[in-house]
Each structure stands twice: as structure tokens, then as C-alpha cells.
Amino acid sequence: MIDPKHAVSISRQAELLGISRAAVYYVPRPISEGDLALQRRLDELHLEYPFAGARMLRDMLNAEGSRAGRKHVGTLMARMGIEALVRRSSTSRRHPDHAIYAYLLRGVAIERPNQVWALDITYIPMRRGFVYFVAVMDWASRRILSFRLSNTLTADFCVEALEDAMGRHGAPEIVNTDQGSQFTGSEFIGKLKSRRIAISMDGRGCWRDNIFIERFWKTLKYEEVYLKAYETVSEARESIRRYVQFYNQRRPHRALARRTPDAAYFSGLELKAAA
Image (cartoon, rainbow, N blue to C red; front, side, top):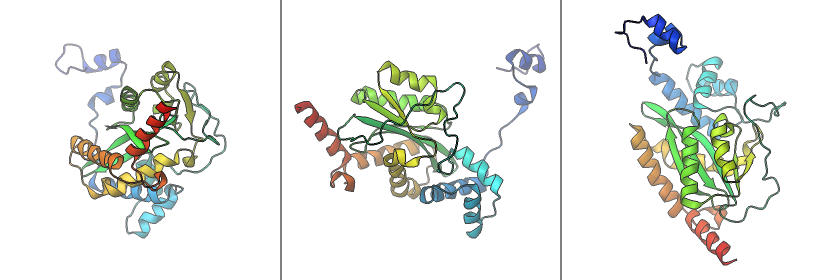
């Protein structure tokens, strides 16, 4: 947008575009190898101890020999999009522009495919960076219906994953998410309302409200992500795609009486059609 060679000065160009002159000259600093290593370890610790906040994680890291302060750990957690999963007071506070919806699944028997879908985002470490991963899961069968990777925490890749899942499998009755801004914004909510899908959201900090997809994150990371060191986003995408295919088609699931998610999903659809 800014043309240094233009007759109009850079200051004036910045003023016309509504940005500060400092932003024109700012060059983002690459994330250090040390911080990437800390983020990887924080991700592992967060999976094991989701209740741990910045102070507890700092103490765990220090006990392992890593010198990191509480504020630095908090900064890395914010970059990764993770926080201690504990129940808070005043959870009804809302973003002034985003509506928050009630949790609809408490006490509901979820017994058939496409009755409830869940979406969530997690952090994926790579050799020289990281990406964010969103998945769409059918709750009854644990089948992963779609996923997307992104290097930013914007809503577009979540909307793409949702649209892909609906294009392949039709619309569910209910979609459950957390209260992250990617899921409360008009772009994502509009897609659900246009298909008359009921909207359900976890209580803030209530990780058990979406426990099945939280369990999938642990499975994905220990069976795939932590065994690899992806060099590029395309390599990460392809490798995770192969794992998701394995998870859906070949990996028996204890909660499904040792059936695979594919077997549970498609047999459920057959029963629904017969009924």
C-alpha cells in the first residue's frame, strides 16, 4: 500500500491510509528458537495439566531447567491461544459486538451422526514456527469431518472448515464451540443461522463441555504431531491429513466399542435412513 518512491511523502501516505508512520517502518522480529522450544513444551504441559496458569507453568519449566518468567510465559500462552481452564466468576460478560449462546448439550443424549458437531482450535508446533489447527468433529461417532490449518487466529479458516464439512455431509442439528472470537463473530454465526443450525457454546473455562474434541487433541499430538518436526505448513497439512484418515478409518475407539469413527458414523447414518 505504501510506495516509498511516490511523490507523496510516506508520512502523508500513512495519514491517508489511517495508519501510524511507525507501522510503515516496523519489521516483525522472527520468533527465537528458544521461544519456539518453550512454546512446544508449554503445549505439552497444557495438555497434561489444563488447569495450570502462567505461574504454575513457569514453576514447572524452571524445575526442568528452563529460565522463564511469569510474564514471558503468559505472553507465549497468549500467542498460542491457550489459557488455564478453570471456572471463572462473571462468565456472562460478553464482547460488546459478539453474542454468546447458551450451552445446549447438558443432559442431552447424543446418539446419532450429525446430531451435534463440535469445533475447536489448537496449536501445532513445527520445526521453525507454529500454526493453528481447527477441526470439525461429529460428537456421536468422534469422526473428524473436516480440518484447516492457519498461521493466524482469524475466523476465516474456521468458516472454511465448517463449510467444507457441510458441503460433504449436510448440516447438523447443533454446532457446539467455545466462546472464542472466531466462533462468536458474525461471519461464523451467520453460516449457522443461514442453515437454521442450533448454536451451543461452552461455558467460559468449562473445558469438559467440549471434552471429546479436547481428547482428540491429545491423541493427535501424541500419536502424530510430537513425533514429527514439520518443515513447512504444506508438510504439516499433508502429514496431519494422513493421520486424520488413519484415525477415522483404521484406529479403533474404545468409546465406540472398538469400532472406528468411520464405522460408527456411516452405520449410524444407515440406521437413521432406515428409521
